[in-house]
Amino acid sequence: MGERSPPNLTRKAGSHRLLGSSAMAESITRCTYYRNWGKYNDDLAKRAEVLGDLTWICRWDSDLERMNAGKKGRPYEFPDTLFIYCAVQMHSKNVTYRTMEGDLRCILGASGRSAPDHSTIEARCSVLNWPLEPPAYPQTVNGAIDATGISTTVRGEYLRDEYHLRRGFVKLHVFSDVETDAILAYAVTDSNTTDGAAAFLLVDSAAAGYNIGKLFADAAYDHRRIWNGLMERGIEPVINLRASDVHANGCMYKREMNAERNAVGAKAWKEKHGYGARWRVECTFSDFKRTLGGFVKAKKMTKIVKEISCKVWIHNMNKKCRGQ
Image 1 (tube, rainbow, N blue to C red):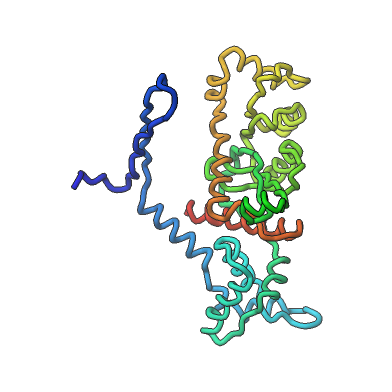
Image 2 (cartoon, one colour):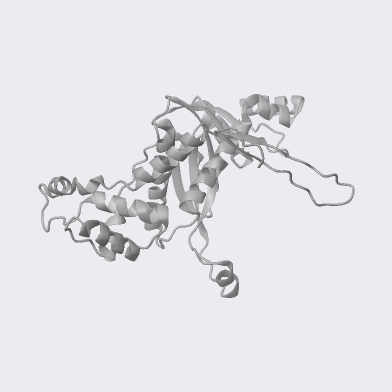
């Protein structure tokens, strides 16, 4: 048996052979990642513990009493906390309404309660509100903005190509914290909305709760109104300059950045201003889609927004568990 690696160290990436022409030499890449496996495993267990919390059963009667106080007409039979649990389970584990109904029969049957049917679950989940509750941060944060596509169908490529069944996608625009990848602001639009069109919607929404120091963005946000708008708001823009854009177009700060980049080179300019932190927004998208899926099951735009809002809420809850 070989020598065992020390605890709390991940594996070392193996060598990778690059295939190409005979002139291309073999390239060996090695990278060592350090991770506290005890804390990491505990974070994953804590995440499942928080999302699968069943303490709402103990608060069933008190929640119903509060919801029905002063209500006219038929009183509520099930509390909202029940359907919050349902929505979180369905969107985090990709289960259907009917499967959720069966799960509730087992959970509530043990306490002698009846479970709602799948149509009631759908109706009540569709009207829930999902407030944006990112983890607690210092008052000043550095953020990154970008957009990604969310598929509106889960069908495979065969049905899409053979029967021409295309439903397109929606765009999720996010403002994420570059330190923890939590989403501080987001917007859902159709696929025709440009990235820059939602920039200040995200910035102003995040600025309502935090002081923004730097904002990292790629060349899709390299527009005069965005540069000037960020400077007016007291935010330092770190935006990738397009190589073809050699004019400041009325933005003095962009003129200075352009001159500096031309003087020291694009790579040195990015290292000086920390532009590499912009990549963290891609990590946010990767984490979001890997754990919650890059698709929505809802058909109507209003319900699509609700589903994505729930997934953003779950994403931030996962980050909050990780930070504790």
